[in-house]
Amino acid sequence: MSGVDENPDLGAAAPRIPEIYEEVNISGIVLHELEVAKAAPQPPLKASRFTIDTGSGTPEDHHAVHELWFIARGKLDVYYDGTWHAVTQGDVLYFSPWKKHCSKNAAAEQAMVFSVWWP
Picture 1 (cartoon, rainbow, N blue to C red):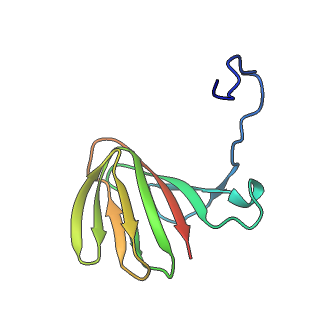
Picture 2: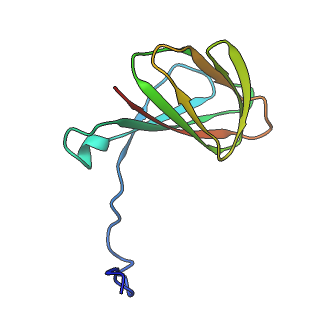
Picture 3: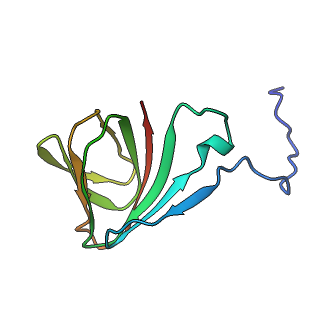
């Protein structure tokens, strides 16, 4: 016996983390930051989900935090610390603090990325 209810109440509310649409002034980018603090007080991380339209990309970025990108859909060309890399759905990327990174979507479909960052 696993301790997991074999007959779950599928009408119960899931422990979802709410999202906030963040206005970004970058053509082809839609950003939703996750309100992790509503799920856990003083969370050890922050998270977001964003999409990148075909022909669009993220601007060059660098910051004091560690960051992971989970490529949920599509293909991207990602620049990291001086080198371009082809990445695709299922890939997970790690960006060290202060290392320059950006992406561009030259593929035929919109890409979706989940991002997690922490001090």
